[in-house]
Length: 319
Image (cartoon, rainbow, N blue to C red; front, top):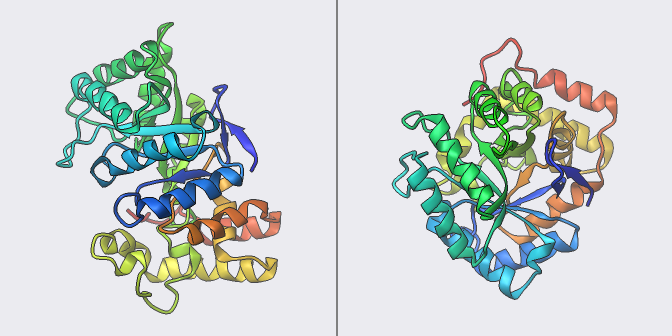
């Protein structure tokens, strides 16, 4: 797997990242182990988790696998904080640093490679939130820092504040939802991240699974849309507009002799500023199909056609 620099930093990451949101919930430890082994064998390095995923079990499973299965030095470990277990946003210095220490304890690590603010907390002054990033880096508990789910102006404000004085930790990444079904971020968030030198880490690059084509004729048993805790997450992308985009992806895949998954992932992977889409899978078999897409590169004419059919410049975006 090829590597890319994360934004304008010196940190190299594999151009696909392994997401672990389902670990400890829909993905048991054995499946997680199989996923991590397959990912590392394919040359993957970036593994992304968060303190609230599966109430901390995602981090616990990852920590166990780092001790027992793979060499920690072969991975770029990324986690996130700023959401309390009850769902409340909390960007206070007190909460963030306690959350980082708890993450390190769950993973049995002395540092993470990338620590990200999971959400923007409007109730806490941004300079206080960002001071926690500086403390994390200066204390050695994090090597790099980034943001997640920030609006364009929030990315710009955070990055400008961190650049204002020497010694502050620069924002090197911005993690956000980005796919052929979610392009509205190209209006403000993507330009802000590019200007700030933050590498894009798209989450749900397969349109919450819809771009694989699995929902073209209904909702399969065992799919996320059939699961009570994920149905509302997938439902917004099961409308006619999204179906039209999915059919274009399927047509492109048939012409290229590959899967719709590979087409959709290659499209977002090679967008301007993207360092690594974060891909999640419930099973190792699903991850294998994702990793097989690494060799697919879209011809310019197909990329242009997909750009046109998914353009949101004059339309209302999906949530």
